[in-house]
Amino acid sequence: MPCIFCQIVAGEAPCFRIHEDDLTLTFLDLFPVSRGHTLIIPKAHCQDLFEIEPGALGAVAQRSLSIAAAIRSALAPDGISVFQLNGAAAGQTVFHYHMHLIPRMQGDALEIHSRVRGEEEDLRQVAAMLTEALRD
Ligand SMILES: [Zn+2]
Picture 1 (cartoon, rainbow, N blue to C red):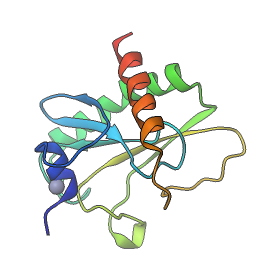
Picture 2: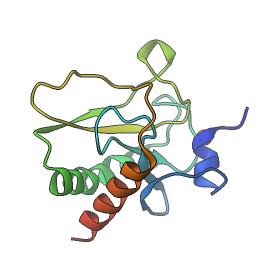
Picture 3: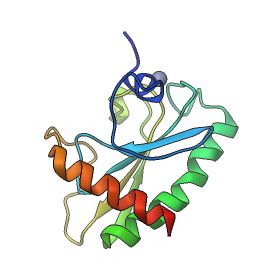
């Protein structure tokens, strides 16, 4: 069973990419809980917190600083939830380490996953907004 996130890293599966560097890739969750729901992953495959290399973990954490700033600047949420889930029992659904950044408005239900795929055009628009905000 190929890993969907490794396929995205390899360019073999599409994504709405926000940012890429040597160690990390940032893209939109295709099933967003809210507009701007973003994932940051290490490029090197590791399943979860128990497998990730310290350097990769640090790279993901550092990347979250600029991504969170871009989300705040582009979408002006009231808050941003950061989630990182380890194991099916914890709600992990893709077994390649990833950090969720979920913009929240006051009163939002605190969901982590959605079953509804985002609208293609809206995902494209949000990706463009976040990419642009990262440049500022
Ligand atoms: Zn993988």
